[in-house]
Amino acid sequence: CPGNYAVSGGVAGCDKLEEIAKPEFKARMTVRLAVAGAFHTDYMSPAVDKLKEVLASTELSKPRIPVVSNVDAEPHSDPDTIKEILAKQVTAPVQWETTMNTLREKGYACCHPIL
Image (cartoon, rainbow, N blue to C red):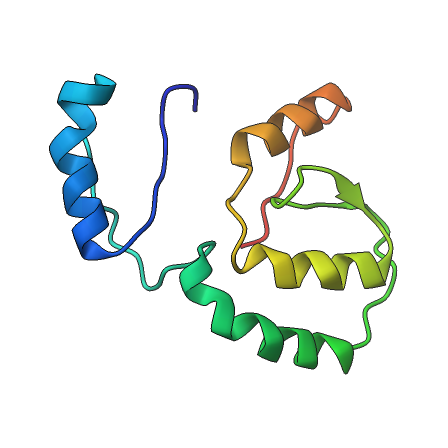
């Protein structure tokens, strides 16, 4: 959503951001999200190689409907490309707004997020 931002970091970094968000960035509020892990951040880097290993031994069929990635907000149909993107999404920021705009621009009236 325009004007909304998600950031990630260690506790000290998040504490500092909360301290300066309102006076320096005119933030109306900050909210710490209750999440199960540091997904879509560099903190997840150790999981990437293991996921790549698993994906290398996993057969994916070409999807009947292109998969729109939350990494680059583009549709993909090539199984090898999808595997690469699945590994990237572990540490890449989610491009939710851009993804929704891409779908709208391509004429899709509805979508079904797969989480």
